[in-house]
Length: 512
Image 1 (cartoon, rainbow, N blue to C red):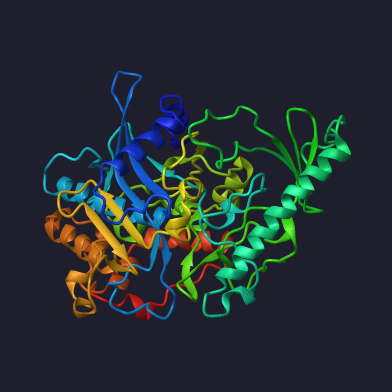
Image 2: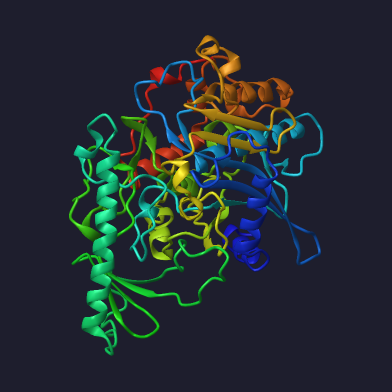
């Protein structure tokens, strides 16, 4: 069944709320270690689900195979050449890397002659493909950081990544936290005043109909209700419709009473524009950010080399989420048929721009790769440890609300399914064991590479893919570069859509 048709069929068989509920239940079943402190700490949640369509039936089986939480990222300085540091601990990245562990386990079963619920043999020698009826969905409790989070503001909620106020906000002993908080308070106060003023001016009038619904400078989008409402109350059905004029950066919304409401600002992202491209204008209000551009996540006190989650999800929509190493074994790349976002500030148009439109024109991809845009859905269910819910439950005695410092990974593997990290290493390790296996996350490059080499060793030499029959393969870099089809697809994506995507430092990838 073609990928697009398969996605359409699945959307008729699963709902966004069902997916969100499964992910939240899986998280609740985990032990306490690494979880945020209720009312004081917040974190996003992301997950990968395997969906299996039952044969001769209109039902599907849904299973969470990987789950992740986390908000932190390592800056450039701590990065090393050993591959033992987990550089990016955002929830979406944690969930995807945990899924890689799961896929390696399933391939290990397949090449060893066992039963895999995921893979079956493909036509090419040494290659595997998904079992009929199997697909993967991606869930995130909040819009991904970066481009997908630059959306019109209809309430006072902020994004998981701290908003950028100016470059000056990064100076000082407190990292500019005070400046950021003051800017947020001022913006919230101005938002309330502007909304009231505009409502008074335009009461009783109607929003002018757009003269040209096809113009690229004016798009209509539907936003969900505010996530800052009391979670005990039912969700409002009064969804405002928003008109965004990119030419003037003026945002207006029309509520059900027909009132014109000026939207004075946008939700901002802490991710910075990559060097060499358009910079953020930093204009007040809605003109603060450039949109559609690649962004780097902020590190701990310094910029990181990790691209935003919006950028990575867009990349996975062309290259697949399996990565270069597993592409050795797969006849076709693996794509997420659907991306579900939990209850939070959301814009369908912005998600489409960030995850799909930027790469929709890419062509001339090698066999096994294609542009596979996911179906985009939003759930009405909010994560209990979202920033909005944490602020709602916060009590003065708990101190300042802050992001949780730990990252949790759980995946459906036989050995060490739970992996809790902080600062890129296992949670709770001492300096004494840094640099040893005891300090390494199961998700770091080195550990995933070792797992992959174990898969290669378990494969009968006569059944090895052609790309792995070269004797000179030794380092992590060697194995990645030997995945030629993947590298060709990456080159096409880079040249046609993401020419400013930073290139990996080869010296950091020469570990064994």
